[in-house]
Structure formats: structure tokens, C-alpha cells
Image (cartoon, rainbow, N blue to C red; front, top):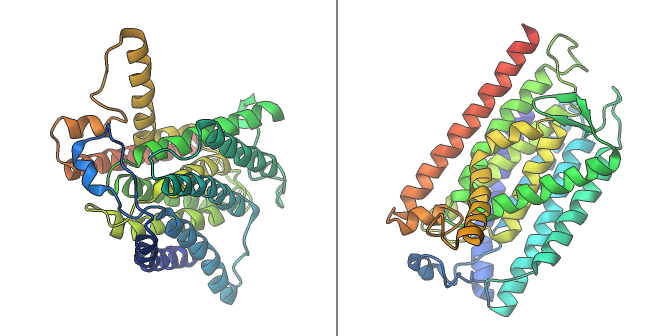
Length: 358
């Protein structure tokens, strides 16, 4: 438990102190956000706000995770594990893809960076490398960071995938989650605040899995998850890094996370869902991000079939802005939706445990 607190404290400190430094550096270099011309008119005033602030989140996560392990040496805590390093590696790789995308936008002074094909290539490459490595590194109990079974709260043994199908599935969830968070990052603090709620829920889940691990406490309802405590450190560091960034990203934002941050955080969700064996549960806990992505898909489908728009603008947080909701009202209410989704996911997680032990 001490390591979790250390990870959160270090990540929060690094993120909240590093972000204003990035604001000054990026502002001096003219790394300002370009705004969609077809977006809400109120957003045009945000043009030129420094972007790529996701760098602070990524550095904060790594600092919190590694720092907690350095402090943990003093009381014989375990060192870094394969599961946690793979999840952080996936998030960082997608952050690099996002950074390239952001940098191209800034260099060309437009709101379009990498081509869709270029972005997908980066996402799929990172996903394949993660998927291949996640099936390696068996622990003392023979568990690898990921399993080839589809998972809800634990592996569904009746649904086992071949290696090829498993890698295709990993590519799907990495692309889906990274793009879902990317689409949600359209209002000041919306993505960072929502992510802190989702990751906060996973701090509880991973610690519960550690406390009821089959490796240390074999009992009815125990969890076969490799390195749950180390994954709790990742989740705690991610939560705190998002909160530290949110201090500067809340409306009116002084910096945006950009694709650097949103793609990295989406990769973090994908990696955590795989390594904790909760791919389907993540759909509930991250329901806000699912809804944002679904609103875009529905908008496209309805328009192509009827030539009418389902929403005034997608993702649908812009629909409420165009319906005369104040931006802060949309943000706070969407945070509440994220909190309710996280609570619902935790309730489902615990009810499954009660069913298993009952």
C-alpha cells in the first residue's frame, strides 16, 4: 500500500511542476494548438494555446512508477515487473505516435497531422509488439502478462483465441481505446478528469486482485493475474499524473495534452484491461470514452444513409455546446458520467467476486 501512495505522490508532484515548465517552453517556441474551423465558435479563442502537454503525463507516470520502486528498495519491495513495464511501454509508444502527429500539425500550421494510414500504422505496430511480448515472461506461477482467453472480470475459459486472433484482438482494442480517448479530448480538462476517474477505479481493482491473488492466497474467488500490485502502481501513477496535469488543463486551459497525451492514455487503458484480464469490464468503466467514439460512428452511419445529422456535431460533447450548454457545464456533467460508469464497473467487479465466493 505504501508503494501505491509513493507512486501517486511522485507522479502528482512531477506532473504538476513539469506542466508549467512545458507551457513556457512550448509558448516560447510557438507550439500552439490549431483549432477546427468547423468547430464551435467559442473554441477559436483557444487558438495558440500550447499543446503536447501529454509529455508531462507520460513523464509523471514513469517517474511515479520507477520512483516508488526506488523508495521500495528500503523495505525489500519487489522490483519492476513485466506486466507493468509492458503497459507503460505501450502507452509511451502510442505517446510517440501522438507526438509525431502533434509536431506535424505545429510545423504545418494546420489541424491535420499524420494521415489516417500513418496513425493506424503506428498504433497497430505498437499493439502487435505489445501483444507478442505480453504472451512471454511467465511468472513463478506460469502466468504471462496476457492470456489468450477473452476476459470479463477473469478469463472466460470457453473463449480461447489462437495467437493470430489474439494479436488481431489486441490491435482492435489498442486502436479503439486510443482513438476513443483522442475523440474525448475536445474540451478543457474533459479527458484528463475522466481518465483520473477511470484509472482511480482500476487502482481499487488491481489492489483487490493483489489482496486476493491465487499466487499468494489460493482460495475460492482468487485472481490469476500476473503482477497485480505492480499494475496498481501504474494505475496510481497514471491517476495522479492526470490530476497534476488537470491543474493546468482545467478550464480555461493553459495547455492541451494533444494527441501525445490522449493516444498514450488510450494505450494505457488498453494495456491495463489486457493485463488485469478485464477487457469487457473496461467497456463499462470507460463507458464515457465508448459513448464518445460511438457518437462519431453513429453520426457517420446516419449521415451516409439518410443525409441527416444525428447530432449537431460529433463527438457529442460538441452537440451540447452547440445546444447552448456552457463548456464548463458539459465538462462537469461528463465527469459525473465518468464517475458513475467507474462506480458501476466497480460494483460489477465486486458482485462477480461475491458470486465466485458464494
